[in-house]
Image 1: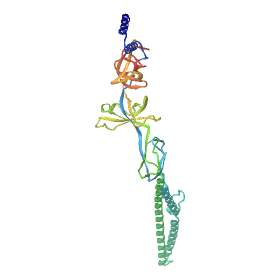
Image 2 (image 1 turned 45 degrees about the horizontal axis):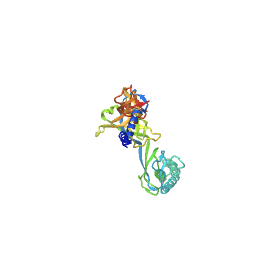
Image 3 (image 1 turned 90 degrees about the horizontal axis):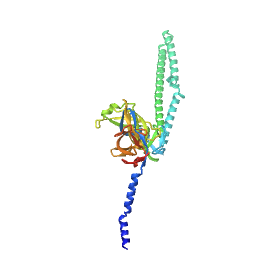
Image 4 (image 1 turned 120 degrees about the vertical axis):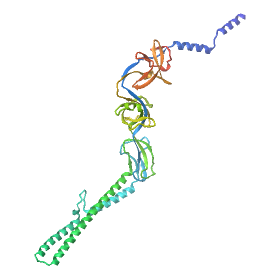
Length: 394
């Protein structure tokens, strides 16, 4: 009995809790099992000077499309997100009243043209109007008679009263011709006014169809069928998103570095792996007094419509000047941390942790500055599992 108790006591004294046993086992395993990774050499490259900027992407054009006439809305052909081409129908208004006004104006114009004897696109000539032509013939006859009577009177063949009668007839014929011609001229001016009125009426009919002023996408729909659209009522908001305008500002001291024609790389959070190319197109006329910065605009092609107006974007402006050396590592080697990024350098069968500052992205590579050289090798696989001094296999 005593021997059994002693053995039990000894076993209990030597035994450890299960939790401590597992902890020691896990610790031993963590120290012994290396982490698989892969290393690549740091790349040294000469690059042109660049400027890092932040800004926003804005539409190339934005239009609050409004009604050019008044009327009840019959149909709305678009909604938010609808892509349209220039001239596409957006909203159609009731055009019955405008159509009736156009019919009346066309009828008045046709009547006036018939009065003047104008057919098709015949050129106006007052002497070709029937009333004027008759008055002109009467004037010519009266003038001929007057000349004949004058010769007879001077020869003493007729009396003065006969000559005076011929003279009076000529003067009346001249006045009648002038009056007829003036009437024809007035009728022509009246016809021009009628044609203008017909043109306005035709425009009113066309204006019942509100069309897109340029290619773009509908940003907002402001009206619905059955509503009354007054003159100037905004019915839709249209934006042109190709190209987009990247608007940013640079400090006054760096403003001389940027010129029209500089290329720029654009990156947005929605597509972290993509680089969008653009070009500086416009420099601000003056430095903003509040911020001491110069506003600048670049154009960014957006044919696939991946970018959206309003995106916040980061840009790298390519500047003129001599190249300088930079160190680049694969983007997969970086682990973002507060104040920079963490990378792991190869040191035998272990890794050494370094915190570096990440710079501009160049494709799959990213510039870095810190405690590393072009001869170092950096881990690019399973980097999130690595710690300083960890044993690795590769």
